Image (cartoon, rainbow, N blue to C red):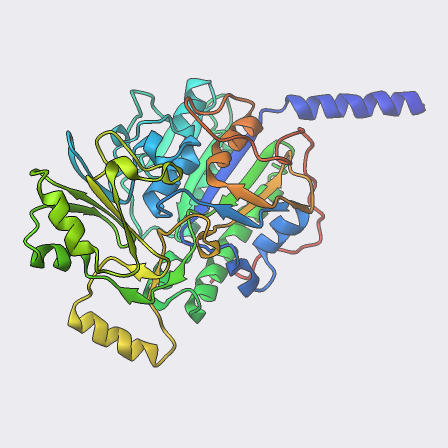
Length: 418
């Protein structure tokens, strides 16, 4: 009899191992690694307790939404995938301004890699997901991008995808969520609104967990929750564009509040620009050829002749007087201005990574994890090769076995949805 039960256990394990794996990857915009401690125990706490959590997720440079999301999807750095900032200039193609056309991405994203290897994918908002990549279609996509779409709608749609039957059922699901980015920018990372935004996100995550519980989906499902960057307070502004204009510099400037690419049609303008920028404090100015290799933003056609990098807490902008006055009033209520995009090694730029489900040991601490390691980790969980050109490596401790996750059944979930 003992031999019978042993054989039965082996059979069950073999059947579980043969189940087609499913991975859900959620990105919460602008959620710093320490934000989860600000909310009552709920869905994220369950993921940490019954799954795994990273100390922080180290972004790429610049630590901004578009480079980060493409690095999460490709396992590469911006110099390889080409999305060097939220906005940039390509010398041959023109201007990119937070677009979702996949043709701008020069490295294979996860959804294309999965489909190429026979794994159906579904994407509910992700940078570059609104068109086919090099002709590779995706089974399901939601477009165009719309910030008014709620996480409730996304959860409902994703659970519907998972309820489908047959070989076309998506087994890779990816979705962008609002996170706490907006309130972090508007009121600073220490504003009370950050915790409120995270509570709302946690409640919707709880609904997704409840749906997976009800479907007994955990035998073959792994859920990853990550973020694209953290947030820090802006200490001061540097009027970069005004300094160039006052010096009579003729140039095109692209980029955001933390990195600026300066392009010259007349190469003789470069020395004049360097002289104009030299007195400004809180910035570093690099010639294209002298950019530190570690930054990984030297691209053949998308890197400026000069690149200006801001120190932590410095913004390369000059706000209008009206905006400065409003911020002064807001400071009476403890509001600040928040920003990201700074050096990845700055702790404030670190994001989150939680994992739960198949192949995730309970209670595992993952330490510090690189953003470029997320894509190869998802690939390992799915049993496929990483995206072509991926430079990351699978995260130690996730997907090393096909062990199924069994919920504790203690009823712990997320706060009640509003």
